Length: 297
Image 1 (cartoon, rainbow, N blue to C red):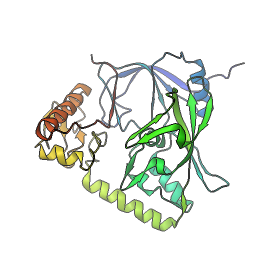
Image 2 (cartoon, one colour):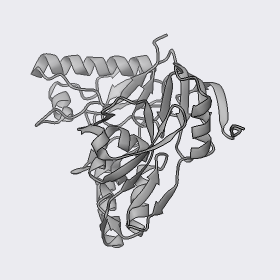
Image 3 (cartoon, one colour):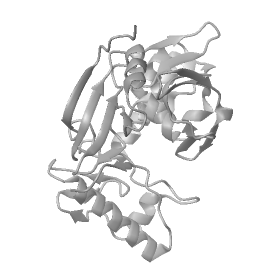
Image 4 (cartoon, rainbow, N blue to C red):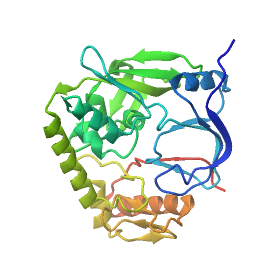
């Protein structure tokens, strides 16, 4: 007999409360699994052609005002298991917040993951986009990953199964799978030194990014040999607004929603204006880092 589902299924779930931009439409269906076993059981029962999106902290996502006509699965606070394996590797599930993973590693006397303290999302999101900062990248640490396919089957894969690049990761065989967990290869380190490094990174992040305002982190990837923020600032776009959305005066590659009143359409329009302005002035076609899903109203 199939396992009974233990999570919560909601209909017409407002997404503004689940994304860091605090804007956007609704999800036709939202599933909050009880744990990894429950999520596997849910996938097993879900139609294979059902549009599906997995969300952690929603720190890199915009759902258009017309909503997402499918199911969004939330992993943050659910897929949150972590442990040190017998071989010294660190196992972490996809719903663990990246800063929490970093603290866990430091307290276990493991180094190399300190940069993840500056990634404002879950570990699953860091895996999906090869998140990085301050010279570190997620997939430099990955030994193997645990995937979950649309039939609920668990599959262990190695980095060789993926095409891994700057802020991009994809399965070479295009199989429809999500990241459920990973095993990291970390070096022995000093716990206090790791914590001090994390404090330095967080202080730098707070000094250079508009963390007090709703935002989704860097909007565009850095082009080769340059920085998106420099190009956007040089194009004279700091402080430019579109309705309730604004290009941050503190960091030009951030779009903020200072009063919480911006619509997803206003944010997306402002992203497009920035793209066009940089292309026209410098001939550089910026690539968007944030993900935009759903339909326009």
